[in-house]
Image 1: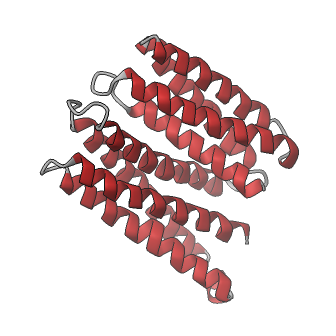
Image 2 (image 1 turned 180 degrees about the vertical axis):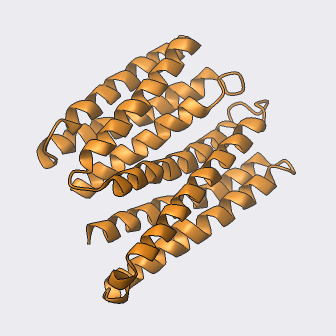
Length: 239
């Protein structure tokens, strides 16, 4: 259950950070309102589970992030751009803090990798949801989705560097790993570190046509690759 709390905090932090990176001049207020409700759900479940499973104040921080996300959704409903963006940034900071608090007994490198992991998942899912929003707002600029895919690729590059460093440091442990750990490691690399960038680049190229529906379909698969890759990475760290 602790792994689930960890993943929800990471995911929520990534989603809120992605909203904070999105231009309110290119994307309508309704998108921010709906996706802050997604952040609200992630933070609420994380707070509920963390109160029983994780010692310390992480559940309080996650609950505060849920409250901020709710206030932000109201602000975006009233098209209060400045207040809405402030809530996006504040929710991101609170969920980043909750992610750090959940990493008890973890080193600085593992904590940093957890934050990058949240960005990978959050940005990939955010890009997919943004692509889906073109069905509601077909006149929306494609540049918004291009920028979000670029941010997702940048987060993946950071995660790749961290994973290569972990492999270099833990080479002896990898050589002694059993069959289950080897299978998880293979899945982590195939889905999250090899498959994900291929899918993101494919969706980016599809936007050059432009075809937002096909790009969004590819991003659906990219979301699955990102989530699967990061979950297996968490299982590997736990073992």
